[in-house]
Amino acid sequence: MRLSARLIAPLAAVAALSTLPAGAADYRLPSPPPLYEGPSGSGEFNWGGLYGGIHAGVTSADIDFGQMAQQLATDAYTNLVAQDLAVDIARLRSSGSDRQNNIGGFIGYNLLYDDVVVGVELEYTHMMDKMVYQDSFSDARRRDRGGFSDAVSYNVSARGSLADYGILKLRAGYPMGRFLPFATIGMVIGEQRLSGAYNSSYTEYLIDPVTGGLGAINVGPVARNASSSKTGFNIGAAFGVGLDWAILDNFMLRAEYQYIAMSDYKGMETTANAFRLGAGVKY
Figure 1 (tube, rainbow, N blue to C red):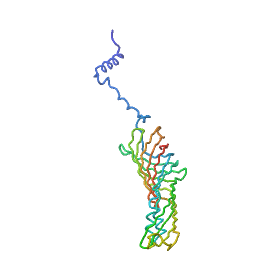
Figure 2: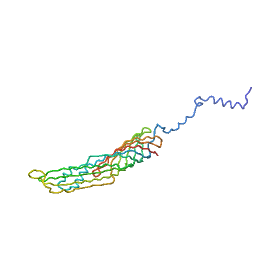
Figure 3: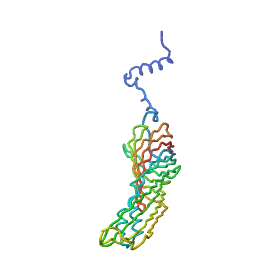
């Protein structure tokens, strides 16, 4: 049987294709690259960018009146014969503390540098009540000089406080997935108040040349008083450590500790320890 001319052409084409090399016949297109998967709940997290939030905690302040009593005594006895005696005995107890709850907020911006996060943050802390320490002290002393005896008795009191404060700080941290331990250093501006009062009495006695004891009063008793009051803003430094935890892509929790040291405020020195917990949003 003869094949018709119509069948010869298609059969020839099939025979030609069957002679192609096997590699060309088996060629397949490359697989598409896998789709990008964002960070999972326990994976990497992008800490860069703007964030802000609120915090609440406790601040404990230690207030030291330093040389305040001596300065008040100097003011009361300036250029008087008993000035060195009055200054020498004037004193207040070294320091005291108070603790208050606080609330506040923070806003900051992070930059990423390889494995380190650096940023700047501004925070404000409102004290639920002013942290106040007050003290008073009384004493008396006598000193002989030549034929006279100087006697000084006094009472001194002081009251100091620390209220709201703000901190502009730099911070650096090492990201560990969704956890960011960090350290901070910054400048503090806080509202402080100081008041002090010094009330004393000076008497100059004659010394009996025979017995060596006190004789008649030559001067006094004379009241010598001084006071000091100041209210305003004071600056200081703050150092801290903390931990941020991004529990969601745009929500984080925070735990933080800060040590605050205010500069000398007319004889009063204030340090504080602040502990707080916070929550924030990452934009």
